[in-house]
Image (cartoon, rainbow, N blue to C red):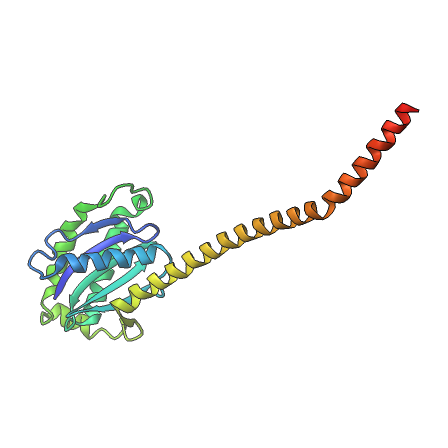
Length: 218
């Protein structure tokens, strides 16, 4: 059964639409929504490995597709057919692009297309019962295959994003520190040169001064 549906822009993770009644009776719904936000954040940072993926989380599973820099995500029971979940997302994608396509890139506020909830709810009802003739026909559709879509664990997916962030942060810190060390090395070299040649310069200065005074007196 479809439990939750969200649509977000991949470039910055901005949520564009969601099913408004989703998760109301779902235990720990806030936790799963936080996981979705973290997934969108990872995608916005370029941590996505595939345009279609399934991500296991507790007794549920996230399925998402990315098309036209938009991510369409749903959370279903693990027992819900993967094939139907992705066909559900395809239906949402096609309608969302048709209705909102030209305005997706210019959307500036969260849930700018919240009215799309009407289509989400209507489509979700069509996919809830896997035993209807319509859904059985979709399950038997050999032209639509999902076997190649990767399935991973949510901690693994989010952990990869965190590790990449840590590597990036460490790299930036090392670059900054190397610049500081390079500047300090230049200062030390400058000070060493001053210590080395300053006495010589003083001696030459004193000799020149004495020579000048002697010429003046004579």
